[in-house]
Image 1 (spheres, rainbow, N blue to C red):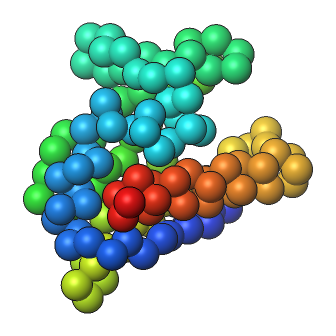
Image 2: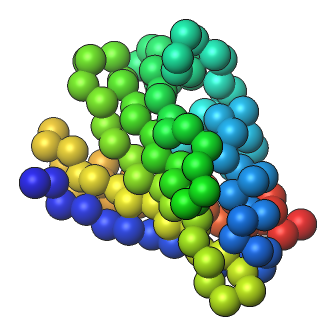
Length: 131
Protein backbone atom coordinates (compact mmCIF):
# COMPACT_ATOMS: atom_id res chain seq x y z
CA UNK A 1 0.00 0.00 0.00
CA UNK A 2 1.16 3.50 -0.78
CA UNK A 3 0.93 6.43 1.64
CA UNK A 4 -1.78 8.80 0.40
CA UNK A 5 -3.03 12.31 1.03
CA UNK A 6 -6.28 13.80 -0.22
CA UNK A 7 -6.55 17.51 -0.91
CA UNK A 8 -9.70 19.42 -1.72
CA UNK A 9 -11.04 22.83 -2.56
CA UNK A 10 -14.54 24.24 -2.24
CA UNK A 11 -15.97 25.86 -5.34
CA UNK A 12 -18.97 28.16 -5.15
CA UNK A 13 -20.96 26.50 -7.92
CA UNK A 14 -23.27 23.50 -8.16
CA UNK A 15 -21.22 20.27 -8.19
CA UNK A 16 -22.84 18.95 -11.37
CA UNK A 17 -22.14 22.24 -13.15
CA UNK A 18 -18.50 22.03 -12.06
CA UNK A 19 -18.23 18.44 -13.27
CA UNK A 20 -19.84 19.31 -16.62
CA UNK A 21 -17.26 22.08 -17.11
CA UNK A 22 -14.15 20.16 -16.19
CA UNK A 23 -14.63 16.44 -16.96
CA UNK A 24 -13.26 16.60 -20.50
CA UNK A 25 -9.51 16.03 -20.87
CA UNK A 26 -9.28 19.09 -23.12
CA UNK A 27 -10.17 21.26 -20.11
CA UNK A 28 -7.31 20.06 -17.91
CA UNK A 29 -4.62 22.37 -19.37
CA UNK A 30 -6.65 25.36 -18.16
CA UNK A 31 -5.94 24.48 -14.54
CA UNK A 32 -3.82 21.32 -14.10
CA UNK A 33 -0.28 22.52 -14.77
CA UNK A 34 1.11 19.39 -13.17
CA UNK A 35 -0.60 17.20 -15.70
CA UNK A 36 -0.94 19.17 -18.86
CA UNK A 37 1.28 22.23 -18.89
CA UNK A 38 1.90 21.91 -22.64
CA UNK A 39 -1.62 20.78 -23.50
CA UNK A 40 -3.04 17.36 -24.27
CA UNK A 41 -3.18 15.62 -27.63
CA UNK A 42 -5.49 12.69 -28.42
CA UNK A 43 -3.62 9.42 -28.85
CA UNK A 44 -5.80 6.42 -29.59
CA UNK A 45 -7.88 5.70 -26.50
CA UNK A 46 -5.76 8.01 -24.34
CA UNK A 47 -3.96 11.33 -24.42
CA UNK A 48 -0.36 12.52 -24.73
CA UNK A 49 1.35 15.38 -22.94
CA UNK A 50 4.93 16.58 -22.91
CA UNK A 51 6.54 15.89 -19.55
CA UNK A 52 9.91 17.10 -18.28
CA UNK A 53 11.45 13.74 -19.15
CA UNK A 54 9.54 12.99 -22.33
CA UNK A 55 6.03 12.07 -23.46
CA UNK A 56 3.42 11.21 -20.83
CA UNK A 57 0.45 8.98 -21.67
CA UNK A 58 -2.79 9.62 -19.80
CA UNK A 59 -6.07 7.72 -19.61
CA UNK A 60 -9.20 9.26 -18.12
CA UNK A 61 -12.32 7.62 -16.76
CA UNK A 62 -15.26 8.15 -19.10
CA UNK A 63 -17.99 10.67 -18.39
CA UNK A 64 -20.26 9.47 -15.57
CA UNK A 65 -23.06 10.64 -13.28
CA UNK A 66 -20.93 10.35 -10.12
CA UNK A 67 -18.38 13.14 -10.53
CA UNK A 68 -15.46 10.72 -10.99
CA UNK A 69 -12.58 12.11 -13.03
CA UNK A 70 -9.80 9.66 -12.26
CA UNK A 71 -6.81 9.59 -14.51
CA UNK A 72 -3.96 7.16 -15.00
CA UNK A 73 -0.56 8.55 -15.91
CA UNK A 74 2.23 6.58 -17.58
CA UNK A 75 5.49 8.51 -17.29
CA UNK A 76 7.15 6.27 -19.84
CA UNK A 77 7.92 3.26 -17.65
CA UNK A 78 4.81 1.32 -18.61
CA UNK A 79 3.49 1.50 -15.05
CA UNK A 80 0.52 3.74 -14.47
CA UNK A 81 0.12 6.15 -11.57
CA UNK A 82 -3.52 6.32 -10.49
CA UNK A 83 -4.77 9.82 -9.62
CA UNK A 84 -8.28 9.74 -8.11
CA UNK A 85 -10.19 12.99 -8.72
CA UNK A 86 -13.76 13.60 -7.60
CA UNK A 87 -16.34 16.37 -7.72
CA UNK A 88 -18.94 16.01 -4.97
CA UNK A 89 -21.80 18.08 -3.64
CA UNK A 90 -20.99 20.42 -0.77
CA UNK A 91 -24.26 22.09 0.13
CA UNK A 92 -25.09 24.43 -2.75
CA UNK A 93 -21.50 24.21 -4.00
CA UNK A 94 -18.90 21.65 -4.94
CA UNK A 95 -15.88 20.02 -3.36
CA UNK A 96 -13.16 18.91 -5.75
CA UNK A 97 -10.89 16.28 -4.20
CA UNK A 98 -7.65 14.83 -5.50
CA UNK A 99 -5.77 11.97 -3.86
CA UNK A 100 -2.02 11.92 -4.22
CA UNK A 101 -0.26 8.60 -3.71
CA UNK A 102 3.37 8.75 -2.69
CA UNK A 103 5.20 6.55 -5.18
CA UNK A 104 7.80 4.05 -3.93
CA UNK A 105 10.78 5.95 -5.37
CA UNK A 106 9.60 9.36 -4.13
CA UNK A 107 11.67 11.06 -1.41
CA UNK A 108 10.23 13.52 1.12
CA UNK A 109 11.31 16.55 -0.90
CA UNK A 110 9.65 15.33 -4.10
CA UNK A 111 6.45 14.37 -2.29
CA UNK A 112 6.30 17.81 -0.64
CA UNK A 113 6.79 19.45 -4.04
CA UNK A 114 3.96 17.35 -5.52
CA UNK A 115 1.70 18.33 -2.61
CA UNK A 116 2.36 22.02 -3.30
CA UNK A 117 1.73 21.47 -7.00
CA UNK A 118 -1.60 19.74 -6.38
CA UNK A 119 -2.80 22.49 -4.08
CA UNK A 120 -1.72 25.20 -6.54
CA UNK A 121 -3.61 23.41 -9.32
CA UNK A 122 -6.73 23.12 -7.16
CA UNK A 123 -6.56 26.87 -6.45
CA UNK A 124 -6.17 27.46 -10.21
CA UNK A 125 -9.30 25.39 -10.80
CA UNK A 126 -11.27 27.39 -8.26
CA UNK A 127 -10.17 30.65 -9.88
CA UNK A 128 -10.96 29.31 -13.36
CA UNK A 129 -14.50 28.28 -12.35
CA UNK A 130 -15.44 31.18 -10.07
CA UNK A 131 -14.00 34.06 -12.11
